[in-house]
Length: 185
Image (cartoon, rainbow, N blue to C red; front, side, top):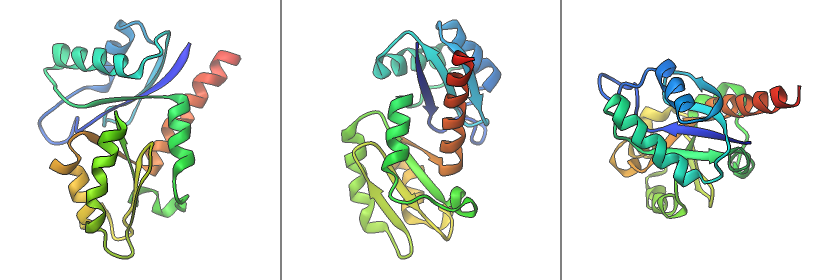
């Protein structure tokens, strides 16, 4: 079985788009996925599946979210290998104290990532914004809410992507690793 990470955009923020994580886990299990583990309350989960197509998984999960919770939102699914590639593509490894100010933008397609290039002009020193073929990375030392790029990613310009802090990305990798360890043990 392959391992995957699913990332939902904009759930459980404010009063709209409510997806209780215990129910999200149950929904993923009802779709035939195994070893489902959610992380935080912001629409993150890891799981094992016999499927190999991330786009098909994203489509099926999006449909289940709409049917079960009435939530229509971008769903991004990455394989464990793709998550490793994202981590490996990071232009910096932020120190522990800076991990909440280092964002990774995930997209379903390369075109959606490429579209983020236009945000580069919003960067103000000492911010750093790098778009790669697998993810976009934003280091905003003054904080996400004081970053024009951070605001754009969280708003309309980033509507087809979802962002996670580096700390959350590392926790997702640890969850994927735990699934691997459980399978071997």
